[in-house]
Amino acid sequence: MRYELDTDGAWLVDPNELAQRLGMATSHLLSQMRRGLVSTTIVSGSGLDQGRSRITVQAAGTAWQGTFDDGGTLMSEVSF
View (cartoon, rainbow, N blue to C red):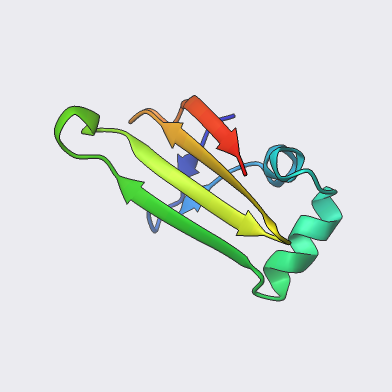
């Protein structure tokens, strides 16, 4: 899994990969997103974590968190 930034600096990821990590169908994730029921938090690292980002996505009673390096490559992940 990788993330990329769009021209406005917004975080982009393949919805199929994200839905799989959240344990739901892509169509359900997209429906939840359209209804404003998906929450995303992005925290940029500092100090020893400089250049890394921790992204947390919450939807439909589940959550996924990934840590990405500055090139957008997933380094670690956890679901809860």
